[in-house]
Length: 223
Length: 53
Image (cartoon, rainbow over all chains, first blue to last red; front, side):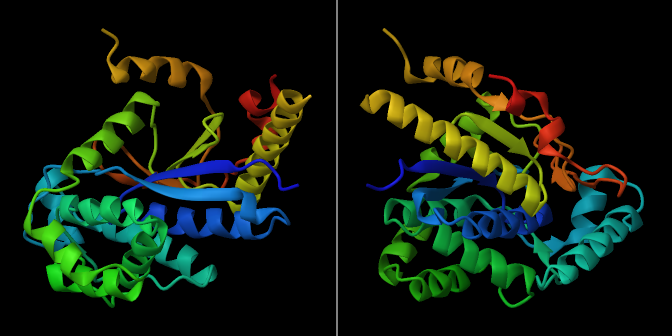
């Protein structure tokens, strides 16, 4: 008999570097478990800046526009994250662009409806942070979607219209209602939530705790 | 009439947000991203919600 399933929901945004690092750590923590197949990872949308312009700009420009002052603060932080990511084998380009991610998230919601939400999100996120893909170009999103098995024409249709916008906003509203204090925000089986990017070891401990409780609950319910 | 959104407080009440110091995070309100200082290591064992019943 298989173990009871455990839902792991990851609220994140595309431009968020800690979401990139955190997602890889979370996936590694799940992969290390002998019962990894019982965990269902789902990406949930959380636009960090819904009012961000649609026209891409550099990270430095985005920082100055939204916070003012000197961009060296954000660039220093980027270099620290880059060093950390490099140590974990994750390509991390400092030349990424920044723009509104609403349309990207709409395709994520479409991909999720096809059972490919994690695959699409990961494909775009990985290529974006590696400096290999501009996710603010519709053609790039269509190509990434096609590579993970989504229908290219359907993705173009989504991008050309307004579909899944309600779902994107609902994801963000739900995340806020759950008390998001830091993004990424991982919710484990609706029992525990871990804010920000945690270490693989911390994620492992939370997975073990939640798996144990889910198993005990299932056994209690079956008796 | 009970709106679906009214379920959110109940879910939130059941959800335990662990008091864990992350390596870094982006602020859900301002959108700004932060790096924790190296000394701020996290240990789930020290996060009370996990060990409480």
